[in-house]
Image 1 (tube, one colour):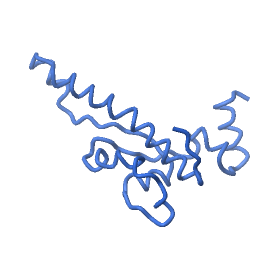
Image 2: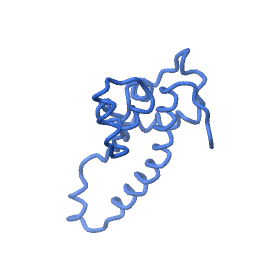
Image 3: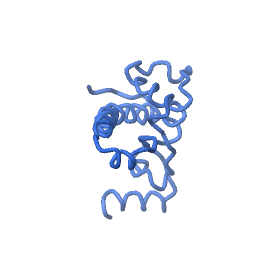
Length: 126
């Protein structure tokens, strides 16, 4: 569904929500497949906790991990917060990504010229 975002923080959080909408069912399917392995020797490979990690910029990262609605975020739709339970349970981890690796930043914010050129080169090749 097309959405008009009023800030970069809102657009980043919306993108995070959309990525969770895609990754959580895949994660559930993978866990179900692992649990249906019949051989005990194969099961030993998967003894570790399965955690899905996604990388986000600071504002979306803070909202996803702290899970507090503020005066600036209260207009975000409830449907965007559906993945909070997965974060609370430790099934999903939202990690920070540096601006130098956040390829879309050169389109959304003012950056030093060198950083702008590096990101533009990563995305567009020039």
